Image (cartoon, rainbow, N blue to C red; front, side):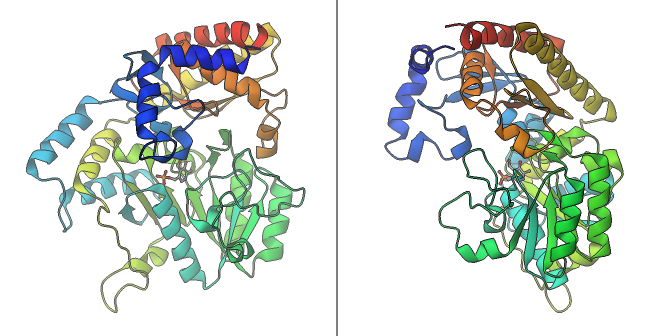
Length: 443
Ligand SMILES: Cc1ncc(COP(=O)(O)O)c(C=O)c1O
């Protein structure tokens, strides 16, 4: 395996402008950035232009962008209809302290695509969408406890700051492990950790705790945790047991919405009580949404006696973002999803051939057009399988791919965008082959 110092040296030599910006950035920003996930050692790459499937860094180096701002740019960069919609709107005003036709239009598109979403509201981030969905569930049921899955990522709200990410000491007993400092221990008492894709244990735990549980929240495709699709039977059983005990089932489809028209719930024909939405629905601007059963969402209704849950947010459903979101969503047909998913499947097959041919233990998990590279010989169906991955090899892979013109998440996650074709997939595989041979198997 290429020594880490040599790998860093190669990186530094090819990205002097990013290195200089990092130095400048750290004068005011911790780690030179404002987002933990984009930071990596020795310093992150600073980007300055994107077009279609490609991005250019500050040194003018072009790469294929398989990250797409952590899966949000389903049409890649500067998609014509989105740019036009944003430019037209910007000339008419950037935001107003009043409702607009833009939010009605995007809400209509989402409601039509996701039948379980009878009513919805917009907010500015996925974190907020999850926070409101959980608050609605607690207010609706009069209970306080939330169940989430080990490895599941739902943003930064306290309720869900437990048991995700690779760096924690996970216990056999599924104890909630805080992922952040500053989470008061009382929050841990109101969270139950469940094992993803393990129907029997999940049902047993829900049965045991049902009297306290307001909500069960799940990513139908575990995204940040390693792109692990939930089995259909598992989701069906979750729907059935939560319904039986009057627990609000929340599908966090912020990432999985790109898997099929109407998300995974559309694909499997399952109706959660609430859904959180984000990433692709905004066309690349900051916007997210939450919605679901009218009876639950009614707690936000400002009419009559006034809302039981006030919903604030200076930029909720802001008009530039709804214009961009509507333009992006209106350019997705069932055929588009099929094309994206086929390309992801083709990438995974190509990688499997490489892993087998080169005798490197590894695999690529796929959920719709999302994928994640893993260095383990385990078949990956749970988060614990992801944890068996070799993180040193993954780091070599990430830097090797960067060096050879492919931009991914440092944890090995990527996705397909609509401007991509077999050409970009072939380029990925070519870069991967060279990386495996030279940087992982080589000295
Ligand atoms: C499934 C899921 N939920 C919630 C979030 C949080 O969204 P945001 O980063 O917009 O706060 C993310 C972000 O990656 C996500 O993937």
